Amino acid sequence: MKDFKNNFDVVNSIDPDDYIADENGTGVDLRGFDGSAIVFSVGTVTDGTHTPNIQESDDNSNWSDISADDQHGSLVDFVSDTNQLVGYRGNKRYLRAVLTISGATTGAQAAALVARGVPHHSPVN
Image (cartoon, rainbow, N blue to C red; front, side, top):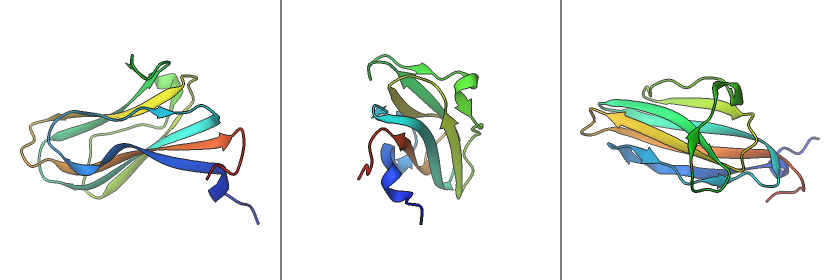
């Protein structure tokens, strides 16, 4: 049997909550991993436009949007009860999820997780 659980982990970048304003997620350190993916999990969207994005950093302080070449898959504005998954092919040490929100008064339920895989050492948990 192949063991998947001990060869990746998942870290919150944006904690589950109701969002009505822009949100910069917490930076996630990719050190010790050679692969990563980002999952946006969306509950109910009641109003507004909620646009997800991914940013990268060398130092967990200065952030920039990742290039299209470094993103495997695409992101679209949130729709209720959906998940969005994109991979990261870049070489920066830190990743974070970002939400840009406009026109929201009650907003959307959402969370963003960074999955880190292809570890240098396992098990990771």
